[in-house]
Length: 110
Image (cartoon, rainbow, N blue to C red; front, top):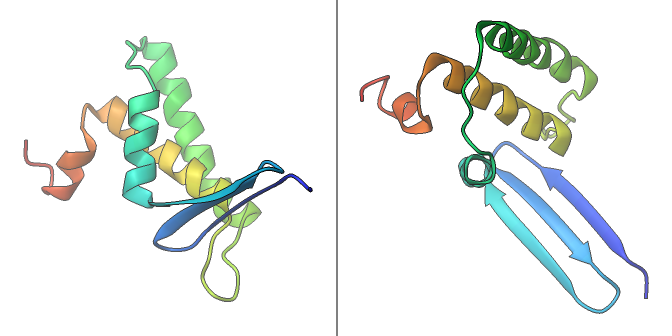
């Protein structure tokens, strides 16, 4: 049996299909759920001023180049890589600004 892994996303969902040759599964996460999972998997770190600037530059470059490198298709769906990297950029920006994901939902209120 053939092994296969596929990943796709749209404006609402990130989906992963895995077939290991014996069994198969599909995992679907909303963008928020994928973000939450990423937050749990990434340890918190202290950043130096140089690190802060390098991370800000990385987030800016993601925002500038990913939409051009991975444009949405005719249905408005974006590539999984773009979705993940845009989430990474948001995480970097929030971490450097000292905000949590919940702050964005509450208009910046603590």
